[in-house]
Amino acid sequence: MNLLKSITLVLGFLSFNLFAMHHESSKEDVARGWVEAGYAGKQEAIAYVKKHLAEDGRNYPGRYVGFGFTYNPDAEPGTMVVTDITPESPASKVLEVGDSFVSVNGVEVNEANMDRLNFRGKPGEEVKTVLMRNGKKMDVSVARGVITASYSKTQILNNMESGNADEWGPEESNIIEVLSNDDVVYVLHRSKDTEKASGLPFEAVSMTRFTFNESGQVESIRNLTEDRFVLEQQGFTISRSVSYTHLTLPTKA
Image (cartoon, rainbow, N blue to C red; front, side, top):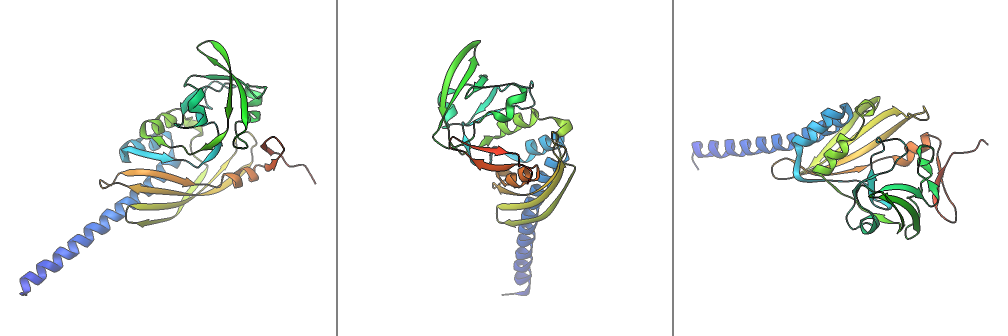
């Protein structure tokens, strides 16, 4: 092999590896930027999702036991109007977008009772509700199920648009570590904030997992969070009664 050909092959190899390193680094940069934008503010987060989430990209939140619907808690206080329904969930069989809950297991839906509406609890148990649909009251019973939700780009952006910009980000946040393997990037990050209702501070560490498509856009997002730890810092404990699992404030010992 002559010298010129050898040099050409070496340069080609180096160019390929430099491109691969840059491509890999750019995924880490996008993932890091995604988390930072999410903490920075509402408009920053929305703009980042619009730019970097693939059109068929999806967000996969953690599983839970419940109905399988969402509502906007920042809408009119004391109301619960269905804004989205998870496909193949218990809610998908009986609820419609726009349904407004009147009562849940005999508890009236109002501003004082929002924390007492036990949609969550033991799988398979029926929850009796009264709701308004097209101006008429309806009695609806739904058995709780295990919900594995996923949200499309449109749903993600709609949910973000409904958020309160003034209460968007935490008081402090930082990225601890960013790791990647091919098209998968993990971002470990920490946040500190104060719960508005109680005035109590809390902190949490989260892991966000990104997958990327061949074009370098985000294909999926999953999160592991310290939800229980956050509740414990607010003074909540988890207890189980015969009928359902609920959160209670601890008594003084």
